[in-house]
Length: 116
Image 1: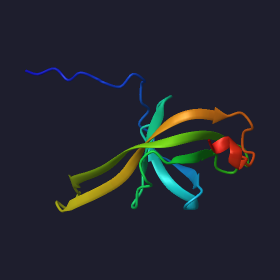
Image 2 (image 1 turned 60 degrees about the horizontal axis):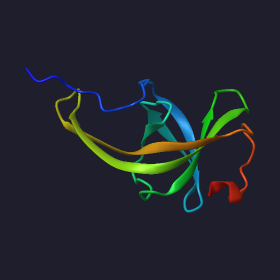
Image 3 (image 1 turned 90 degrees about the vertical axis):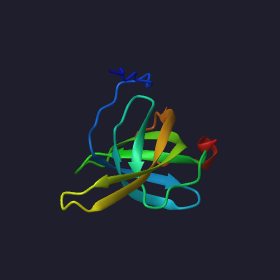
Image 4 (image 1 turned 60 degrees about the vertical axis):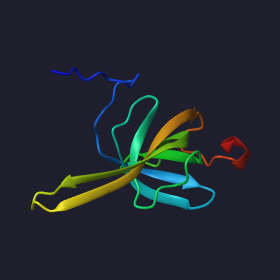
């Protein structure tokens, strides 16, 4: 029997939640995020952003104006196919984000010069 070796250096939390992702090209868009760790996360996107592009990720809490913000880079593109409950084939696409740094001014608009 072959043992599966975990390559990830950080533990993952498999939780589904909404994030607001802001880029200069696309603007602000809400997406579904999952599988978060201290170094990054997976975000479902029907049209993935370009590799190595930077984005601001805002973790907004329901009913709260405060947010936790991070600068992230699009690290990988993913496309998954799986069997649905009805036996049909389903698909999911998205990106792997790598957190570059967290922004200390929580919830505040981020100046453009801070994106670099």
